[in-house]
Length: 586
Image 1 (cartoon, rainbow, N blue to C red):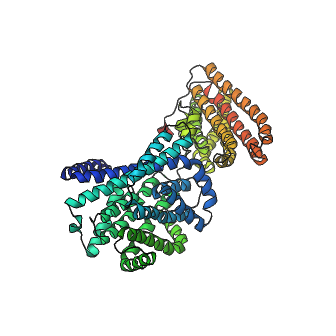
Image 2: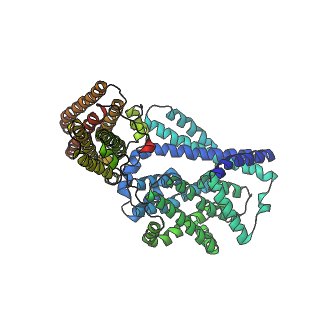
Image 3: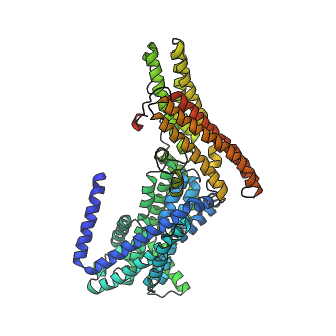
């Protein structure tokens, strides 16, 4: 597969170069497609900058019923004009456990219907109006806003620029096809009948996969149809193919998702395949329905662009109506086809019975296993509060990371404890008990110190588990004060892990202890500062009493976790040199 991926780019570039050599008009069409695609990417980026707060908060209250999930998919896709972005967001929400699979399927169904609004706009206005007139002001205003420091203005600017590029791309595609039609008539190469339909469906799938945008493919279809480069039947087939090809983005997005995300991508694929099959089998009935609806709406007989829009909406709507009663059956099918992978449970790596014969060997293996346990626990804690471990251990400013990075899905701490921590910690405790039956004196005392370090790690994980629920809720709150307060708790834990890493790298135990003592002082100052701050926040109505209660309780959890981590670090990293383990050794 990797070889195919490597060959795909040079082949596409070679075909483009050859096409440009054949006709200068193709350059304009290709430029229009490129500008349109760039507009979609820009628009997606603009909306993605808004998605961290509003969409996630809106999602929690808008998908608890199937009809709500359908409406959410329709509305968000209509606003964003990108079913791909909605699919990616829904997969991330599902992977994070914010919604259930049934709600995700409902949103995907709605997104398929919502994406038809784009073709209605293009069919109704895009080919009759010189969109470049509107594109230029949008680009100018958009770029000015992008250059501002305010994240809100930047986001609005990206959205405006995205729409401007979309309009400009449509304009150039239309102009290119108009010029192209004077020299070459593609309609002479059209294939009629069922064979021709299958051929153009395949062409629509391939073109959508290459462009990674069904919207671009549908616009290209309408502009080619308006320029009489393809027939009405060809355009219908391309529309079906574009609808099928759009699932590729969701499938690619699901590759990095958990099993729930993969099931949703599979549901998207199944829905689009069934919808396409319905459209193919009942094509004549759909054409009759399109004709009847067109006459009822007063659409002219030669206005094929609007008829394509009706057809696209109609077969997606029929697909939703037919599939909705079978959602639960579809979920059971997906759960059977895509089963939860067997959980790999971390087991002790360094402990062995032979080490019990020597006090030095016993101490060494317990130390190495304890250090490994810390490495495993750090990942659990970091992911549990929405950090990537690599970000915590980097030198990047934590405030900038919080501002610029979208928070990844939080890890299920209970599951992580059971699979990554519990068995290793239990093995350490059991080994130390057995070793102390033979080993006494200083070695025996040090073994207990290492065992207690493991206990501190487990205590820290449990405190973070208690903190996690409210943290993940308030981190997306509309109230900036409570949102910042919980982000400060995330930064506090990240700071402690960074200080521990610095202590690990110190050769001098006294310097390592100094770093840890300074971190502890910061923890105590934070505890005092938060306690003194909460009451004024309630009095000024910056936060509610309920928020304050949660914040006080969760601040205590965070501070206790930090204290436990620092206690562990004193035991492991200030009395001897530590061997930093490579990730592959964990």
